[in-house]
Length: 549
Image (cartoon, rainbow, N blue to C red; front, side):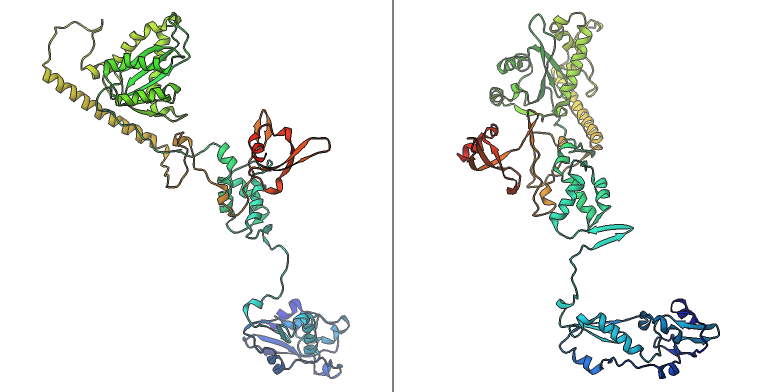
């Protein structure tokens, strides 16, 4: 078995007639070492006088050393190839045939000296410095752990698994530069984290690469501004409080863009009670001032139903004016305004606007210029129709009776006792209030299935002019790689021409042709980007120029 293993890589067949006889010797690990009896060959060999080191001399070199590493060459002699003209001299005979050694075998008289000379030649720069060698045993020594490194190479360390990848060191500016190259530049496309990671992982690697790519992409300023969100809407539904009786909470809005009538009306002021759902359709005109709108509100609403406690509206200039706010403050009415681009805050009035427009189309298709004359009848029809939310007509919830109509059959008039009337009215309002609360909870449950509860913590910066569902958390790109220079801001298009914002004017100079140039520090750019521009190009940056002068 030992011969077979040796023959696989160190022997070749021999035709030499003079051969030696092999034998085996046990190793410390129990395996066998094949040895050839080369005593006859050694007797005729010129001896190599290269000195073999003394053990006591080697031990003296270790004085003061505290850290050691031991290396032992595997099949050390077989690392040296035999000279071609000496291969036949190593021939030996077995029952499998005659063979010759291609590498240096054990038992040759000059083998130790030859091997020691080769080892000393290879490790000569380190001998007596940090290495001692005795044949195939190598000992590396040092006084402390700081001097354990033999050599330092100024080369990139590459990680290879299937294809070569460059390992990027933990230097944040370098990693940020690579991420910008694979995501921010125009040919990278500002794709998502998956495509960006696939592109950069083809050639580069560093620990937590996927996490860094995810953080970088999600904090990209351009992506956050330009890309639409695929997530659920932020913010759970926050229903408005349900009033307990009619005309406590009122909503109002304008329907504009209508064809002018012969009376000069081209708009409708729509007012609805949040409890009974009763509505009033008041003709007006688009150019009506705030004072005129206030007069209409007093004439048609306050005079008939009293002063409401809460008034819900959008941010129309009439409702945000100083006059309107002072008037409602004097009346003791609280103003509740919807956010920009979020009409759902007062969805009930928006729905009523649609109903009014449908009623007008059906009633005035042949008399477009007289639509304002039909509003009182349409208002009566709406208030006398059963509302799906309350299960009652707005008329009945307000007055606890149904109005007389041509369709109503005549009946003997009966007078209800006052006490019973009051009891019936309050019972009706209580049932309606409970019904509205139940419907509101059902709507909230359905809406919240498609929304996320967004938590705002202390210290967060928020935009309080827009509804939360139109916003999403902003991630500052400067927090990904601390200490790195943030990307410069993009130019602003002014009349289809890109312009950059001036931070300050640093200096000026006059050219030979008389023109004046200014040294500009650009906002968001490194000082290395400072540049000279003509004074005539500073038309949109007069303030920095004035501060410099």
